[in-house]
Image 1 (cartoon, rainbow, N blue to C red):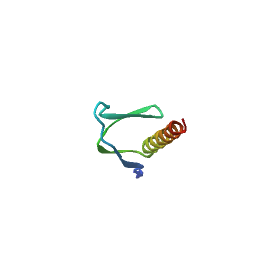
Image 2 (cartoon, rainbow, N blue to C red):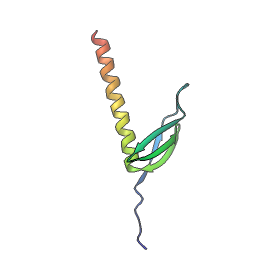
Image 3 (cartoon, one colour):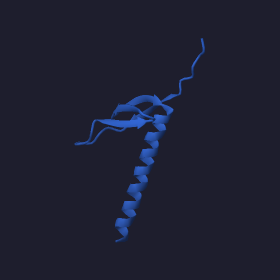
Image 4 (cartoon, rainbow, N blue to C red):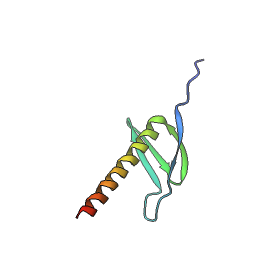
Length: 72
């Protein structure tokens, strides 16, 4: 039998604030994941990369919005 390499990794999703969804929905290549917030989940590398990419994009958006607000 061929031994497969586990390419999954652990990723921690921060706890939800009041009024937020209690899970994070992620879809990669047609596969959907519903990850609980406030816990560590073991996901494929591609899913963890998409979550980190999304967080980076949100941070960039927030930084730009803050800079524009200060400029006015």
